[in-house]
Length: 421
Image 1 (cartoon, rainbow, N blue to C red):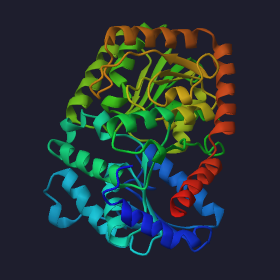
Image 2 (image 1 turned 30 degrees about the vertical axis):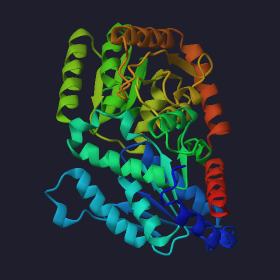
Image 3 (image 1 turned 180 degrees about the vertical axis):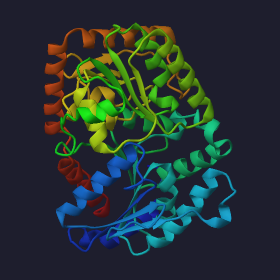
């Protein structure tokens, strides 16, 4: 790995190595998202990882997150700096990072998640001499459409991410596909320091539970087949392709979209227009634009026939694990880390995609991708018994291969390896 600041990391590791197995070892986990303010997979990952690590009893986990104070021991919230209230959103983020970095003094190791918190980890590492580990949930070079959202702030976020990655003691990728993206995006990194620890799922929290009253509240008929989508309205989630593909579904199949938090007014307008077009062609199109509590999401997943994940960029896709844990088969794009979760012909259908190599993930032939997605969805709803078998196999795979206890153990092993250098 690039080592412009590497000396301090190695010194810190030697200084702390004798303490690495002690319950007094302090790890500060830094994240923009943390309960109750979670809107994406990275936030779910952080919350579950913290719970798994704290359950071990051999490490003091301190959480430093964005936003209001949390009513949780060992967790500190950091509000936006009022002095930056009118500044670009990326600068507001760096302001919070500076405050978080000050709080990390005294930690044995800092572990940051997403670019929002990466710079806090980098600054804390420089300040305190402790190693900094980054978990990669997404990569700014792979999301150039964010320039629509952040303007010049996208260059700031890209700078913050690159600086943190190239100075970190280790980078954890949530999938092998993500690891390859990291090494392509940041070739200065030492491949030996880029490690894979998959995302996970709490199979007790996420399990099939029918609640037809929830469905009725939104106008979904539990007696009819349905395709369900859960995700934010952002370019990487591929929702416009799904809306086009759903026009080919049999008329009795409902289309249920739990889709909110649009990145920009432009993507929101595009999705709304495609939604109107789809509703003009067929009935049974239900759009839930708000972020629902877990129990209600589980109700939709438990009643559906198949889950759709049309993402054009997905490092792993916790949402697929959530669907699988609810015994729902998955139709998903064969990109990023998705093929490491969804087994084609066993737990679902993988839709092939050839993508433009400009970082956007855009299909080379969008019409072909839409047609292939439509064909997979139609195949999935054509045989309910097969879909049910795939769903049960998906549940078993989620339980066997993606438990948070196992992921906590693997993450702790990375900590110990870094601290023992």
